[in-house]
Image 1: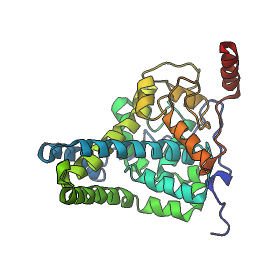
Image 2 (image 1 turned 90 degrees about the horizontal axis):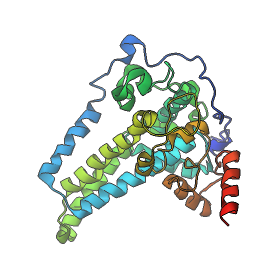
Image 3 (image 1 turned 30 degrees about the horizontal axis):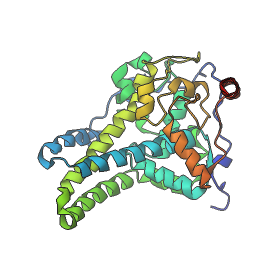
Length: 321
């Protein structure tokens, strides 16, 4: 413990900001037996989708819908700000305690641990939309890039060479080994909240099963496909203001749903930025929330967008004044 850096940000890993040809790396998406879907392993993922049908029995209430939206947005922020911008790209700095809290909250999204997530995302940036990309719609089609890719034997594992900086932290490895703990605790908590509200606030018309289905099941499924859409839709639909060596695109509607991740061409052009909406009108909720956290001293050194864009924005503001 004493030899570890105080935060992840002090570790040497760095993603190059300028796009370039993807280096030759081992093809993880085209290895025969290794890229077959392991249906037994992904059974919980499939059962969670089927569990959405339980809404026909538990009904709905405004409280349930509100809880579902709150937990959806909370975990969208954890994934986009911490799993993506922090663990994968080191776009800002924070304390070790906040680093752990962000990782734990992100793992409640039921999308594996931060080490697995970052390893695969870093590989994606090294080989984006080439034959070696693990989830390219150009190479393997929409359904593969959307979700089939992580159901395979090869991609279920973690290439530890990609995440040596993350492996230094025992608490992150603990989350990785116990990836189901946070989702399970969240599921139990939604059920317990429903039971308590049914007993003490019966006028709300909620129950334990209802809040479990809405607050955890439906919220998590919505979170899945919101996240997955960046790998699939954001490499097919939208505009390309920057000529990157991939198919990344900016998509306004995806940006709204994903707190700014839909500015995907921006991101592939300059992946280290904590801000993915480079222009003033490009809504980037995760960045706004990170700025608020920086006011509280919880995060700092947020990496800005490209310098030439900052100059363009400054000149635009001067012209409007």
